[in-house]
Image (tube, one colour):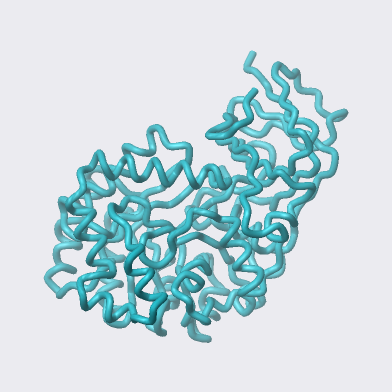
Length: 410
């Protein structure tokens, strides 16, 4: 008989419920259990509720010591496999230089591309594992990870292979995305993506998704559509860097292509909002990017939610525009800067992130049958994840029913 773990002495269990994305006003609906237990068997949640009603034979016991249990965070937009840092550029921005000035001097994405191309695959694996470990310590159990700092067949494959290798031992479940269309190039590079990079990625089964950065001065709407349709032809689900610095009508394109997500959306138009709200494409918002770039412009989360959109939150972890692995920090920015409620932000950081990765049937909530991916907070209730800001409240993390990277153990 398989073993069953009883997790008891929980102050609270708070979770969204469902196996698909939650949209609009329903994002406020959390199921909250007081004085309840969780039973984990074979890596999955076998029971949630009052201990007296559980009739499952228990073989192991874990005292949560008054922690609050929430679903493990699902970070559905990151750029993990990079080399080098850009802290000096950050300091230059603090002193008044613009991104364009920095890029003109050889900085920006180009500097990360140079460092990533120079790094070995083994070095990139180590970097991904180190960042995943930090993510895990902050409660993340699943993260999307993009290429996009290689920008050639060999170097894009190197990044994606590093994600695949890291995933074998990572404390965070990694979901790979090919973002070859990330840095402006001429039309011949679009040809290279379509004719060489995407076929090679598909042949090695290195990615689940294909992404494109559609933006003024980067890739046009037509170029992005060409790349994403090529990805679809290779059975890569589209995601879109959309309407970040200008209205490129790319949110509407994401809906047209039935993309899993349209990400950023700081300049989304009314047309884009209406399209997203009526679709199953997730509006994936990245407030840490606005914060880190010292921008006053955040994505219109309140308008999107009120229109009925499925909204997710992610870190956008990368060395240039969002150097953080903390989903709780993202939730704090979402509530304080984008006027989301705590409940909406928790749903966005868990179940809707899972749906963005088309994994909501497996992860993103604490309910029977799903994978036992749980973050335990040193707090009396879920409100503290936003209320008690600037600190890491995560005491322990469980992924697939196993405690990972924490001080607590059985």
